[in-house]
Image (cartoon, rainbow over all chains, first blue to last red; front, side, top):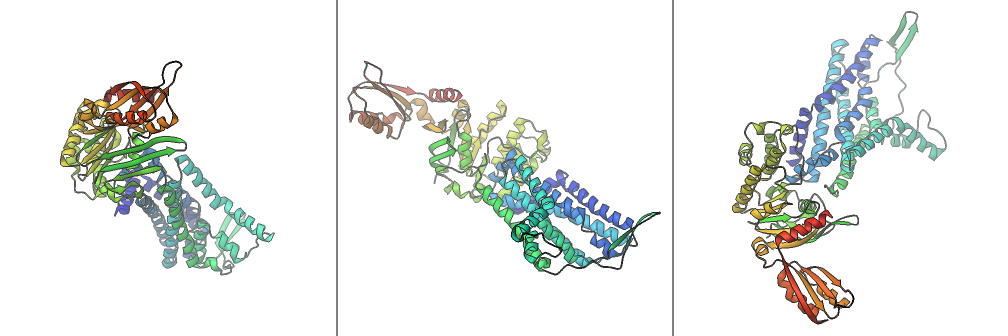
Length: 289
Length: 309
């Protein structure tokens, strides 16, 4: 019960501090904005195309930032204020506090994600017709699992860091590594092994390395689960620019291990479990003075 | 089973020893006053008892459980007020109490608890961010009382309280003791400890300088003693023998020129005087001696002076 007590209190705190509403507003804003642009710019878009754009800046850029912001203070913040002594003075173990915070903050962000997706789906249904709901549901489950992984990383950082400043530094570093630097890391590793750069169809082992990044795993889940949409042709004439859908579908990539939903699930579950485990071991042995 | 029992409890941060080999015991139904100047190591000792800080050496058992197990279960039976911890500014006093009651699995009425520490019904519904220092401290005391704990561990509970609050705190401590709970509380103010404690311990520089029954300490039996012993010779063996006596806290030699060397020996318990004399006689002849009984006040004052240097 004690994990539930901590998680419930965490959610209540997020409601009181308006963190829940802010996170929801930001995620919803980005996903709706992306949809709005697609629906407005492309001539006669079909629901499949709109669905494909459920993956976009909201999931790839905004969600990781929100996850880190929601989680990086979870433990270290309470340590710096001394609130942690209140929680641990009650019958809550350090593990209870860590897991409770993780569950609470994942729940907060899950509300934001679900709210955003529902709004976007509503928008598609209202303008171009009902999108394919089953693939979307499967994809949303992957996004929720990725959300849990990102929050786990942030809460793990907050359990290891001694100060808030250090926690945010590590979180920013991790974000840059996973978003901007990751392709260089993967290419660099490939070059170190083969003395050449990966081509359009890289071998499975380097794809697996690439997918150890939870954000890559989340992004590939969209490629695997969401329906393939026709390519968009952008034509520029004297009257202006227009975007239309062509009849061509993009050349599908070769099916490999990294396109197995089971593999992607395993990677994301690993990222849920590992940061919490490392964070717990460090937090368990820490002196809270 | 003792409520608290420590054995050589020690905490070092790097090369700095904050708490040094503390032995103390607190029984059910007694109030133990843990006295010492600021920075003496009181809060670190309490943090070890509550498993916030891990001891580097020695053991501590709280309600029979080793603190190193870090058991959360045991907290069902302990009411705690750790050193100046922050409350949640956005939560009301009542929400704090309700959360703690739920966490403890206790049946308690937040309003009754608030009333017991003198928080008014309107105040307890306001968010803690609007509270004065004294009100926050009253709330912390109320939080420690939830679920009729077998042991109360209160770190500087009187800090931030006005005189009325301090009187109320004293009443509450005595009520809790009469109910059968053990109360362990720290303070840097001697009078506050004297008023309510059955036993006290004085901590200076991480060492327990004096410990025992308050009446005994006050009347001098079992009080600390400083001996000055003149002997014909001082050898290393003699010093080792004296230092190995349990109650000896300090032993120094003054050997200045033509006069006979003399030993200055500090004892935490005057009953051990005879042991010291026997140890010295085994290696040398005692020419003369003086014994100065030290009062509670003098030990405490000395500690404060020493700490502020």
